[in-house]
Image (tube, rainbow, N blue to C red; front, side, top):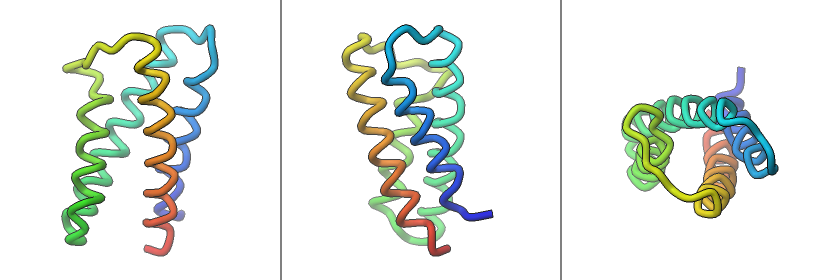
Amino acid sequence: MSLALPYLMSASLCLVALLPGLPYGYFMLVRWVVCVVAGYGAVQFFKAKSEAWAWGCLGLALLFNPIFKIHLGRELWWWADLGAAVFLGVVAKQSGGR
């Protein structure tokens, strides 16, 4: 299995979250998946001494943390989901060769 796959799946979830009318449960699923994948990415990038990528993943994991939630308005979450999808897509490309 490619190491890029979890990042691509998380990015896809974030892109779907941009659609209107989704139930609250979907956004909770996105929070859990993105938090876990980004947290794992942070650990892997810190181990690989890629600190910029590690800090980016850590920040994303904190933003999407489902336990200690950051409450943003719907419009801000739209931008956060879009930014997360782009970032996770770039991380997938970066980690695809590992």
